[in-house]
Amino acid sequence: MAMARTTALLLVAAALLAASSSAWEVNIQMPASAAVDDAVAPLIHALRPLLGSGKQAGVACDSWRLGVEAHNVRDWKTVPASCEDYVGHYMVGDHYRRDSKVVIDQAIAYVDSLKLAGNGKEVWVFDVDETTLSNLPYYAKHGFGATPFNSTSFRAYAREGSAPALPETKRLYNKLLSVGIKPVILTGRRENLRASTTTNLRSQGYSRWMKLLLKQQDFRGSSVTFKSGERQKLQDAGYIIVGNIGDQWSDILGAPEGARTFKLPDPMYYIG
Image (cartoon, rainbow, N blue to C red; front, top):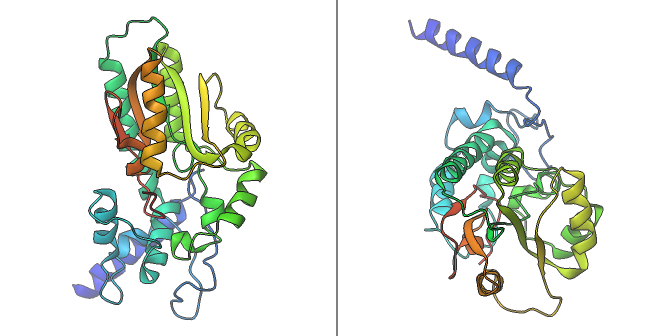
């Protein structure tokens, strides 16, 4: 009986692996620093997260990720080294896309419940990195957050303007345009990345935003201070922030947060 059950599970696993070919699922060779199973560097695919929590060296990686998303684990600098493989499979497999879909489904249901004034003053605030645009092509080469962040190499990547859109976020973005809510894009990127960020967003199908707000080059405060300050300016100008979405808690904390906030998943980095 045990042998039969094992054989059946293997057949199911093989079928799932063969079927994991959607546009969002990307096969990426693991970096050389990643753990090696049976002397073969594994490919990232949607099946891998189903095989366990990635508990290594005393770290239950799925529990660590839950702590991060619930904002119980804070002020961390890098993904635990033993969780690099787990985070990579989560991000590139279909689990990340499914979690994002839950968030966006709730956001769209909220939009459908609104009674809009239609006076051009209702806005929705969007973050950029891991919200409107995905930096997975960059992080796949940098340990999925398990290696220290290098601002120089990231800026070089951002200047390329090649980051793909997050498809679930685009669904919300287009919904808002269809009902007359104006998008405001508020990012922690600095002004020297305005041109490449604008080009990147437009090339990925984002358009008709009301404002694109970036940090001044000499700004030295926290992300919460910067973003809450920019939202306050919007409110002082008479705009009503009906929604606010980002991948970091610092995107949505700090008054005025907006009438409703939504947190997208991101276990790759923490910005306070």
